[in-house]
Length: 164
Image 1 (cartoon, helix red, strand yellow):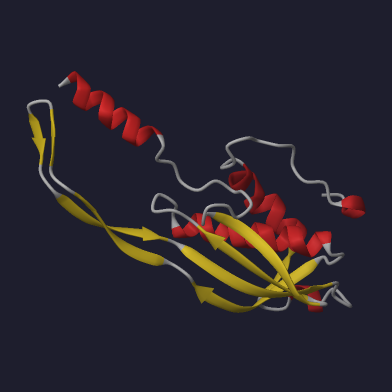
Image 2 (cartoon, one colour):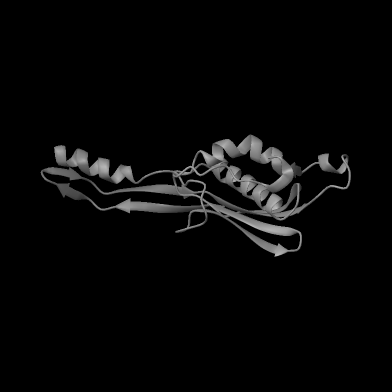
């Protein structure tokens, strides 16, 4: 029985939600420039990552990319659901004298891609149009919980002279 407990501890020790990280091994977030003022942001999580976390990753990466490219605001112009559902099965096995029967379950891995247009609004009225995000506000409001998901917590990003 003690071996069974240790086996479960070992199996569960590697099971964590996807942290905010560059896309690697099919998990994380990436931004790709599509044209002078548009960027595609893709975020993919594992089965322990919530869809809310994936959306937060998308918004923070969009805000970071906007500021890195000299913009202050962005708008989501297109969105695609990249979530995947798969069947996870395990055969029946004996561990010592204990038999674990075969099992199957569904695992949902959330994912999404957004296309953003970014820039600097011409006036205060255009900065508050529906669907327009202030990149600095996104980072201030959503950034702390997104950056907390990182396995290694680096210093918050610096965004030049924007004061963020």
